[in-house]
Image 1 (cartoon, rainbow, N blue to C red):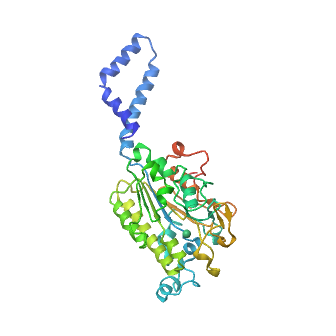
Image 2 (cartoon, rainbow, N blue to C red):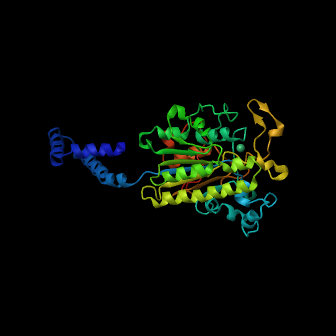
Length: 374
Ligand SMILES: [Zn+2]
């Protein structure tokens, strides 16, 4: 129950009606008070009482965050790269088709019409990571805290010394047991600092087997009673890409897209979350370009305190960011000259939940300009 409802409840219970008002009136007359403040007080009380049922019945907003680790904006907006697909079945399905992008991730692309989709550099829409590293831990740390963490310079599972938005939400009483995380990467426990805050993080029981097919059924089970905040971190896109398995990378992207649709539909068919849920989808980094197989990796060349030029994959700071929700409209604010950054996701999550004022931090990047009426 909200503080508001408790307050109203107390007023209702403590107010036996006539007697209470009678006392007020009596005191007013005996002390010679003007009727005007009393009328205002009564009007305010009546307004509060009549507003209370509406507020109490309106379900609170929910939030879905999905990351598709290292999924390139190039495949999202252009579809499968014909120079990289070898397997005939994959060519038939993803290359020799009228619309390659739509053949691969149709749901994610639909957010361009039914939401906001940022990062199609072919159309002068830009999103990037703001951290200097262009690999996973620095990316997730930036996304979840609202700014790069300069102390995160490699991928080791060192507990994050920043407080993520998920932790900020989880420690609010109304979010108790309502923040659920399903992550294919074990290090997400450290990024979210599970050790400090006890956030429940599900990770693959068998790290040798493909990760996403273990995460998806576990997250699917949670959809029966959708949590107010759901974070699903998928990553076989990145895992297959590092192995040079382009077809496997495409299959992982397609599976991710199918699951995105499933999550969205589950939230839209549950009366508690329908029409009150915002979904945000992004990636922790991009990848190198197709030429010379640089697409298999990513990184700026910086690692810990060093710069290793051979580790640099040009363009792997480029990402996409997508959003859909009751008040989300397409964002044309972000161009190559004014790139959106991954860190803006944190503030966007808080804004979507109406908690930017209470949980936003002075050093957090501003929410993405994707909400109508701004
Ligand atoms: Zn990677």
